[in-house]
Length: 302
Image (cartoon, rainbow, N blue to C red):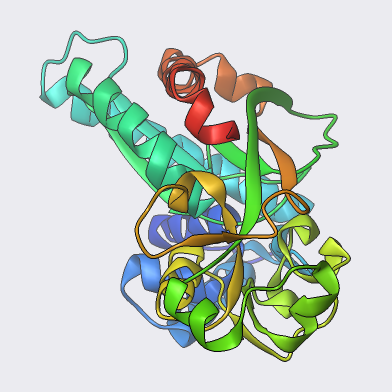
């Protein structure tokens, strides 16, 4: 008779859920306040208990296998049950009470998603939010989040894409940088300048990187995975940066470069699985983000 397999640890299942949400062990370790090695060890232990691989490595990060998707569904049920228990203990009558998990690009997330969710939470105090910054394309197999806010073109058959509008990327530099290095008058002249952008080797949304712009190779680069680090690098005169217009337009310390010759306009979407959109909480979050983007469309798309 085969020895009974011990049930997997709920903690390990929840770690797998976070990996499914973020896609990378380093990001999971930072979120959970532990180390990459610990996350890897816990996943290995979980896979031993389950008898197979839960994750496969792809250029976009870790993706769930069929077994991993089954395990994540169990983890989601655990979190849903814990959320229901939390509401019951609080004797909460608000139908929007509970946890909503959102993955979003960080600049748009800070400027538009955050105020929308804070306002929604003020109206419904029993809503809890977990927001994860991730600049990536939507995945056919993504699990662990209720809603993804993504940039660029979507091609999904298992989820619903909800348009939030477009935003504009333009070239900016600090006044002091332009005084020292000169103001380029044509795109070709950018080859003599430093350039600030995303780390190309880790970039999952090609439209955000320098390589896809058609601009000449710069003299030097300052690359960062965080758009906030890029904005700060431009402000501190590291070079000319390809930045979201809504983050810097009109701010002191940022001068437009080739303003009439170059811009990039990208669509932004909220994407969710049909089962997630059946949740009143998720519906309310989508509506709040849509309202925020619509109310500030002049800033978003200017």
